Image 1 (spheres, rainbow, N blue to C red):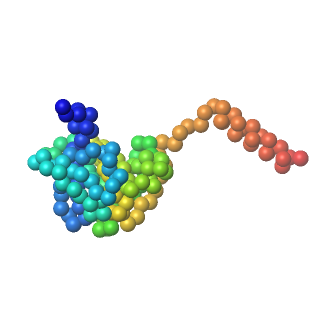
Image 2: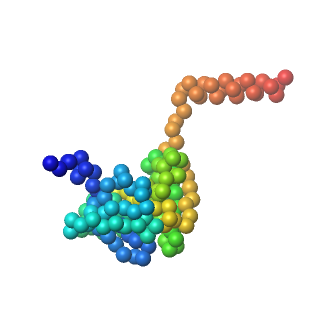
Length: 168
């Protein structure tokens, strides 16, 4: 009997290698970056092993028939999604912007999970191995959590206490 859980976790992807070649298929995002290679189930039903240092980016897409390259590689204005607004420069001098999770544990992983600027395009999100990047700059923090009323009162109390120090 086949396990339905494992089949439902496979997502449509296009893997772009540093040499410019493209591999289309299905991939489990849960195991992404855990090993030195990724196991891609091709459209022909065969397993293809891709070494992570040879991969430039993995595009998680809606449909195979549509273009996988994002129409825009930069935001037109400040993004509205929560996270870190970053600019990535690849080893081949290609560059793009996106949003990554505002979680340092995710950034210290083997790669970056990125939401591209074109939210309505064919690409849902991307995985870029660390080995494919030459540089990653944070352009801004978007969607900062708002302070609670209690923390605001505590800050006001500290400010009032400190301001009295200079009046004495």
